[in-house]
Length: 129
Image (cartoon, rainbow, N blue to C red; front, side, top):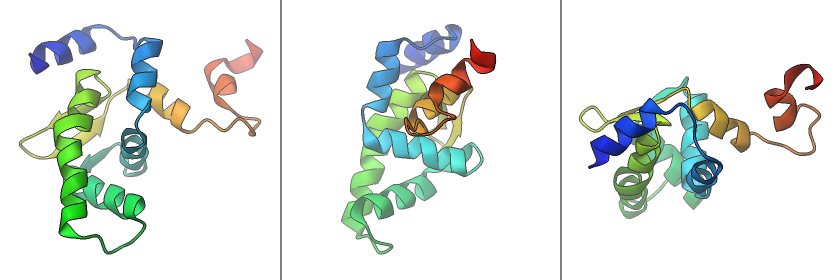
């Protein structure tokens, strides 16, 4: 069933507004997208787990249970949800995550700063349109 959702998501080039806001409604998913982008668009799940655990628990030294909490939620919830929407490619065998072209729109929302002159709207509507 999950494979059918991934195929359907890839066949359509657009995410609906509801899909976008649903995907971005969780801080862990937003931070995951930012981290993978900063790693060049691809990263290993253990590196993502370490980064998220350190940032969420506010320490370079996280316990095994804290790390496991982050890993399990990534594996069971967040990565499948992003993969089903076609935002990332997640290889469960190699534990690699790669951003797809669909991630660009979500990252634009993640980087939005309403106090900046070069905000989201200027990036979406270039040349004053």
